[in-house]
Length: 70
Image (cartoon, rainbow, N blue to C red; front, top):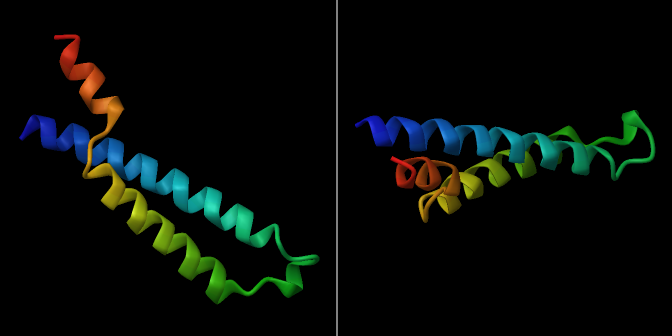
């Protein structure tokens, strides 16, 4: 259970970073703030977060490295 908590925390941190990076990139494609399509920003960001979680199912180096050092 402790290993799952470590994995979950690392996966969520990675997903949040991915969501933020996607939002920044999507917002950055607009010339001015009033041109931002917020539905697309939110949709793309949430999809990126979901894909990040699914990718983390394959393994997270942050968790694996800590376990190997014990």
